[in-house]
Amino acid sequence: MNEGISNMKPADLRGILNYVPRFLGQTFVISLDGAILENENLPNILLDIAVLRSLQINVVIAHGIGKQISELSDERGIEISNADGSGVTDPATLDLAIRASSRASHQILEALTQTGLKCAITNSVRSTPVGVLKGVDFQRTGKADRVDAEFLNHLIAQNIIPIIQPIGFDRNGHTLRINSDLLAIEAAFALKATKTIFVTELEGLRIDGELKRQLSIDDLEAKLDDAESSSFDASALSKATHAHLGVKGGIARIHILDGNVHDGLVREVFSNEGVGTLVYGNEYQQIRQAKRTDVPLIFHLTSGSAEKEELATRTIESIENEIQNFHVYEIDGNLIGCVLISRYDEEPETAEINALVVHSLHQRQGAGSKLVNFACHMAQKEGCNRILALSTQSFSFFESICRFRETDSDSLPASRRENYVQQNRQSKILVKDL
Ligand SMILES: CC(C)(COP(=O)(O)OP(=O)(O)OC[C@H]1O[C@@H](n2cnc3c(N)ncnc32)[C@H](O)[C@@H]1OP(=O)(O)O)[C@@H](O)C(=O)NCCC(=O)NCCS
Image (cartoon, rainbow, N blue to C red; front, side, top):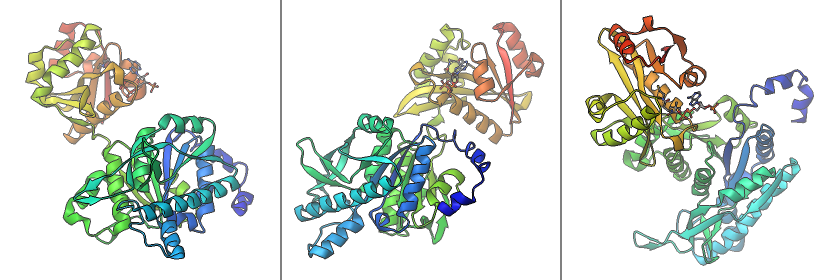
């Protein structure tokens, strides 16, 4: 690293500006496998974490203890019921897990302190016992019941990196062992993290022998459904199932990173150079075609905006007639937005965005631009080369956020122009080439 710095010219620092805004203020949960904590590359990984912090990315570290617990078991001649926290944890294994965890957290504290970063081991996860599954009592194995995001964010605000151990406490203060992959995902959900990065000893995920650098959630799901995914070994299977769980639950990107690679973390985050496997969600997975049963909710959404003259008035009947051209945006099964994609017989290459609305409680969280991008994507797929939007009050949303440009009524298809003149709403006309 010192060699790297001495080779740098001050002008190279300008290049860093390209990276600064990229993930500013976002939260990444970085999960370090137990084996990685004993890897000689650990100081480099933690240095990469220091780089992320310096770019104002919020970092929370979770860690595993699989390797440490197996070592302790060998050292002490105590048999363990399970190493990775996914099986039964008997009292003897729990005892070793507590010791292994404190050893592992200490290794992180020590190495982070060397990089000049402040950090703290936290008690931020309330746990509940897994209980009895398929007739097997999992004893002291727990799952995350509640992650105290407020506490973790408070530490982050103080410039302290929180460390989460794979050990939790239930409401009565009993200690439970938690699988660290699950813990990282639960923490990412609670913190609304945009990434979870599993730092492992795996090269990445292999499918049918081929190392995948990028994997869509749909492809991963198909593989996991396929014959109990016999092609993944135990460690890869845990990463694959938890990456699936995480992306399905709304974490945009999950990386399974090869912790042996020098500078791997920074390279993967900023260049997607391929230092592991990136599992990514379908960015439109919250959007689906509308059904007849959605008509009352769409009416409710659009009529609210029509009252404020943001949208043209639509009757229940007109929504019913066009329901197949409506798409809706759902969060946790609740419909929070919609868009209507209209087409014109006389101009098949032109589409129009209509009835775009996001419920006021959910605005400014990206749903509106996602609906617009989705409409553009669908129109393009159907062979259109431009898409129109007519707006009275949201034209600057279309211009500045969605990159439409203003045009005049001559660009409207003939039937639309007629209707535009009749309605006399004086909407601005915007267009985007696809
Ligand atoms: C327009 C609308 C769909 C945007 O939805 P959204 O989910 O808030 O949009 P996003 O979160 O993707 O984008 C938010 C950005 O758009 C900007 N924006 C939203 N409405 C805007 C408007 N009317 N004028 C200018 N900018 C607007 C916000 O300021 C925000 O900018 P920021 O990220 O710099 O803070 C939503 O405001 C809405 O439903 N409005 C009422 C109905 C309407 O006017 N529909 C359009 C008619 S065609």
